[in-house]
Image (cartoon, rainbow, N blue to C red; front, side, top):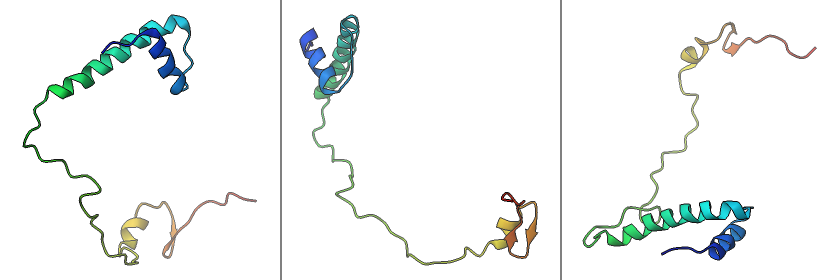
Length: 95
């Protein structure tokens, strides 16, 4: 399939892409290349190939929604420059 300049101009308008007349030929060639690649897909034999699993075919795996503190306070606080008990100590930023 080969696009003409009028079709390329219409595609650009539908996609809300502002193209100058000088750019149309370059864009037309690029679109022709893309359509050529898509056309090659029709040559692939997919007989007997099961469909890939999509979001509509498999239920999402979910974990229990449990509130925990993570039990790793010491590991988290070990990255702090200064601490005060179980809290970070930061410089005062508002006077």
